Length: 333
Image 1 (cartoon, rainbow, N blue to C red):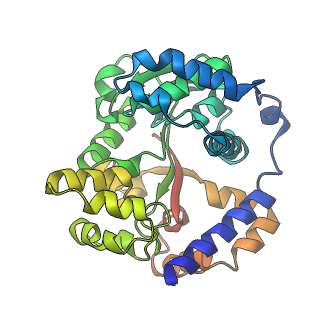
Image 2 (cartoon, rainbow, N blue to C red):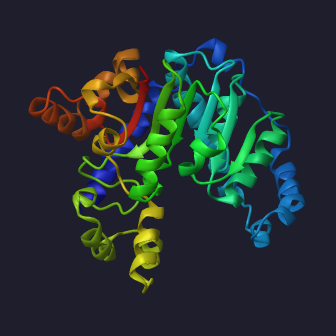
């Protein structure tokens, strides 16, 4: 019951965001939004054409129903109306050299590239990255794609220069070693004044895992206990996928691939203490300051009360690290 109430509360916050955040899109951003006529049929054709490039050829045969295309539209719309204005408030995206970690099926990639950013996108999932390529082709956007693990960036891009490295809802799907290595490697890639960004990663310090298990206090559990406790998740596909694996190492890997929250502790281990890092912006706080209706609406939520409670206990820690999800921008000094 607690889990259902908490998820409903999070959905209320998302509705407030949609009502009071989406309507404030700067003209210089809005005018760059691209559209593709007859996108669905063109996408289906391209996926069949590209199927021979994939290790798993059956990916082209996956059901491309209305729900799938609604998901693509919804994610692209969300990035355009929230992530892009937030990033743009720190630095204009036109001409910005971006390394995107975890491009998925390309919703964020399209939103960056259509604003004039020079995008290099990587992902470990070849089928998702293939979809991202198709989308950028249809939107006539020039993006460099690489199938690779983020721990390899300092080798593959040793001679490249980036203005912004962004972990797009990807850190939570990595093992601890992958996470620490990729965070350190990407930060070292940046020149002085370069931007290092985390987007959409669930915060381990929050009281609800709304990303994966939908279980309250799940983030706080040690991994081995959390794996066993997965049997109580309301998400049947998640519960069965974890519990049906017999090999303990494989089970642990799959557990991480589904998504596990992180906190500022990994950032300090991989980079440096928080008081030595230059924190530029947090997405939630940015939109609160931008819109008074949104600010008032969120103050009545349990998320805000929880954030305020933690802030009283630890005033030296940035409020961004007390949100349900980590959406943070740092500047390298």
